[in-house]
Image (tube, rainbow, N blue to C red; front, side, top):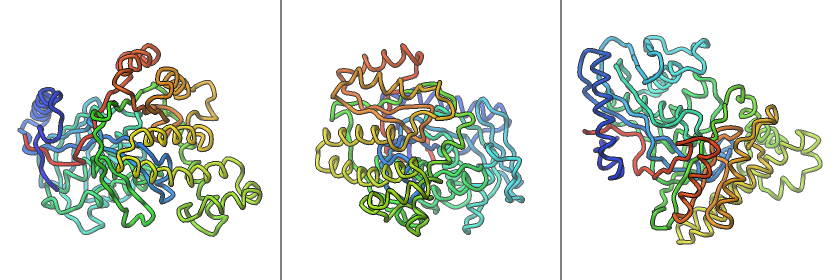
Amino acid sequence: MAVHTLDEIYTKDALEMQKQRYAAAAAEFEKRFSTKAGRFFSAPGRTEVGGNHTDHNHGRVMAAGVSLDVIAAVIPTDDGIIEVHSEGFPADRVDISDLSVHKDEEGSSAALIRGVAAGFSENGHRIGGFRAYTTSNVLKGSGLSSSAAFEVLIGNILNGLYNEGSVSAVEIAKLSQYAENVYFGKPSGLMDQMASSVGGFITIDFADPAKPVIEEIALDLSAAGHSLCIVDTKGSHADLTPEYAAIPAEMKAAARFFGREVLEGISKEDIVANIPELRKSCGDRAVLRALHFADENERVVKESEALKNGRFEDFLAEVRSSGRSSYMYLQNVFAASKPAEQGLSLALYLAADVLGDEGAYRVHGGGFAGTIQAFVPEGKLEKFRSTMESVFGQGSCYVLSVRPFGGTEVRL
């Protein structure tokens, strides 16, 4: 694990604000623990660019670490207790002498802390106690994956304090996913953690989930004349876990028809040829979601090739196609259980109205509520932002940059 300075991690226009942010975190740490912080760590949120709901079926994704992150001021301790005070939340205390799954912790930060520590220990890495104060500007429920950033942060702290940085970013991502799946109780794929842990603009092929293939892609959005925007529609994710869980479950039901556990390796042609039997076996929505997977998996390849060959407009066309597929076939833009709440649909309509044939827009992340993503031409940025904020509130449109580094220790 490398150590990076503030001016390596953050853009010039944000550097002074970040200095103040870290200083405030250090001051709050000292206030709460009556001692000075000795180390600092950071993990970014992520944006999914392509591969909507493909990772959990061992498909391909395109993603990027973004300029919003969770940071921690830290000191190691020798008492076997991990104590984390996160701004705005009650403190979490985890005794690492007990790394069993606690059902009463499901859905909590303590579950993530215990799960990451357990993953480290079970895979032969050292663990130990520490005190930390964290603060985050990765909006919860934004589709930027605040939970993955927190998991990756904990992993980087354990890596830096007790393993001399020897645990790779890829392994930290896997151990973070383990914590979320087994301890937190959410059946997520690996994309969120991998994008946060590795950083930059990347494609990931999960065909062999034990050895994901990661490729970095050079993309200068400003040189292409576009900004990356995330619009928070302020929708609630409460009670939506069954909607999320149904997507991988239905895709895997379609895969089982072919005698496989996941859809990776099953061709679109095979799916189409067996639609009548698939409909009877697992229902129309599962068929549509399987078709989405097949197309979306290939779409990531097309997006990657377009960027590598300087065909930015072709890349945007594939992003638009991804958005249509998610809306029509994956069906994760609104929850069937909450038909009156369709903030994402409204945001997508507004994006189409402002952008016309320019730029691109799509549902962002898991879907059903939360955020959309848009690549907005610079000439339309202010109109796009003002339109979105007139509907969803001041500050609901985030203009982001791609962060070159994933989880890291920070040298002030």
